[in-house]
Image 1 (spheres, rainbow, N blue to C red):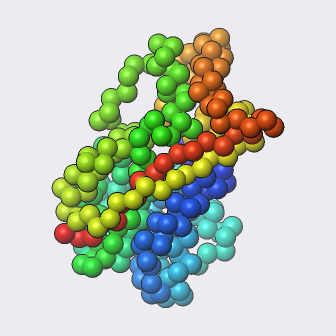
Image 2: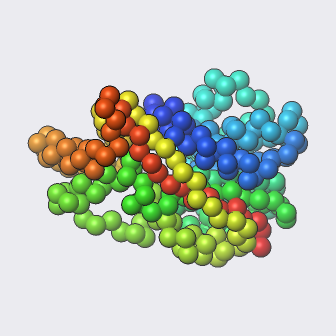
Length: 266
Ligand SMILES: C[S@@+](CC[C@H](N)C(=O)[O-])C[C@H]1O[C@@H](n2cnc3c(N)ncnc32)[C@H](O)[C@@H]1O
């Protein structure tokens, strides 16, 4: 999905700017520190932290997908950022030594790793004593209609089966107890949990549909299985779930909710 994410980077960055800023504030990066971003995608959250690390600090921007790492590298070049190292890294099997980072950022990544506890364990391992990890996941699917309108419509129309809540996916850690348990079993102590609103803006329903098609693996997989008529039906039904967020000029403003966890090595 890397090409689609890169195409939609700006809309996504706008929607999640408050969240990114809050994550970096909670991380409290200091000049000279080494900060690791895991599952960085296009790299935006880590790039915000980089500004606070000064000339002697370093950001390690990593993702499991080489295409995502390439996209982040291009973005850093556009922003003229120095002191950023890039790497292809699986969150469940990091190549960094024990106690080697001062802080970790991971936004919307942990729930996609098949073995989440192992990934949390890797974060605990590479974080130095006294270091801090700031992780973000999505809150409940009900509170994130931008992302769930198509899945809901597909279910209602019988185009898909009910999702397996244990399979990697955006809402796999939406239950706060499950989230806490994964983090703690990985060897981290939870310091703080807070909900952060996200607001999605699109110029039109067309822009919402194209953005969702570009960034949702669930939708691209489903569209490959549907006929052209079924796709039209799916889209109309999904759009009906968003009508309440439409303005008179056809633009869309959809509320969403993320959850942030601050954790330290136990
Ligand atoms: C939903 S995107 C989030 C990207 C970025 N953190 C953001 O918030 O914009 C999830 C990212 O996790 C990455 N990812 C999935 N599984 C991973 C794994 N096992 N280890 C590291 N990254 C992974 C994907 O390649 C993708 O870039």
